[in-house]
Amino acid sequence: MTNLARKLGVTDYFTLGWGTMVGVGWLVVMDDWLIRGGPLGGILGFAIGGALLLPIGYVYGKLVMAMPDAAAEVAYTAKVFPRYVSFVTGWMMVLAYFIVCPWEAVAVGTIAGYIFPALDSMELYRIAGRPVYLPHLIIGLALTALLTALNYRGVRLSATFQNWTAFGTIQLFVIFIAVGASKGSSHNFPPLFTHTPWVSILLVLQVVPYFMTGFESVAKAAEEASPDFQGKSFFQAIWMAILVAILFYTIVIAAVGYVAPWRQMTGQRFMTAVAFNHAIGSRWIVSIILAAAMLSLLKVFNGNFVASSRLLFAMARRGLIDPRLAEVHRVNRTPFVSVLCVGTVTAVCMFLGDAILIPIAEVGSVASAAGWLATCAAYYAMRPSARERIIAAIGVTVALSMVLMKVAFVIPGHFTSYEWLALAIWAGAGIALRKRETL
Figure (tube, rainbow, N blue to C red):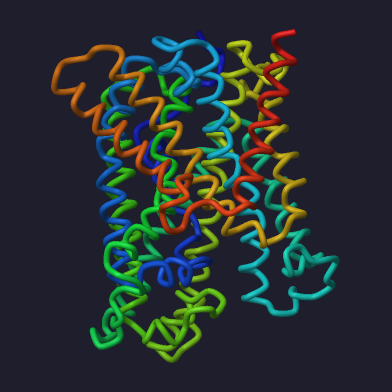
């Protein structure tokens, strides 16, 4: 079925799943999370949102064991739904993964500018009032080129990079959380919510899908498992990725609320680092946090790069988009055309600057939830056992609720005109590609 290299093991799939989920949102947009819900609203939002993903993770685990196909959601929906449903589902999931790549490419310049303020210079232009600096562009483009080269050369090289950056992030996270916990106070927590408890949790829940997207990336690399790989390990990797991500997000939100009076720090750049610096009174803790963020940025960028390029490759192989994207390198056995496509478009999108960071999270949330919805609906339609149909029905309900939270105008925090515009542009591009392939 495939001529991609088969070199991945269970550790690789865990770091791909978890590494693709947890990026640098906990540093770059922590103030947005706390403004939305407050410390307790943020903790409950991510805990509840993460727990609600477990039935969806269960469905993915069962499906990837039965169908280890890089097309993932496209392959699952193709079993029971018309071809256009598979295309729409796949195109939305491509958006969910790809949209993270320019996010991280922009974020690396923003973090570098915080470490070295001299990089916040040579302003080229502004978008939505936010400056775009030449040094930021150079750094982001260099990182994009590096990851494109890694993924072009081979999946084993990419997986090794993912493992080192993922476990390095975890180690540094444990260090700065432990140190911060020794200096904080529960008096820093109030106010626990920024709105009523329900609205606070809801506003955080709306962005959880974006920051928890990634566990299902395991399915996109399923064809690259080593020959002796056990199918049940796909299931284990997906669930471990979700559980560790829940712990990571809830702990870091709790830590920020605990170590410093968070309300006084909202609006400050990289609020997580500012809060820990306030508690410890030393720059070294900020260096640890920024190092963890850099490693985390690298792994989530790489993980989403892998997932989006594999999904493009698989959709092209099925004739849903340009078949040239399904070409495999004769020596490296990687989908090199799809890899080059993702790298090129990421580089182009970088020129929009960091004004895209928050809107991207909003659109990515809906794209992810739409893919989860279609996958759970497909599993339900496959008529598994009664118990598993119930789990699939729960997954459908959860995913549909996540979509409605952003598109229903009566719910606080729904899409603004900018998010609708971004989604419309992506939908239009998909329609144009589909028409071209059907002519």
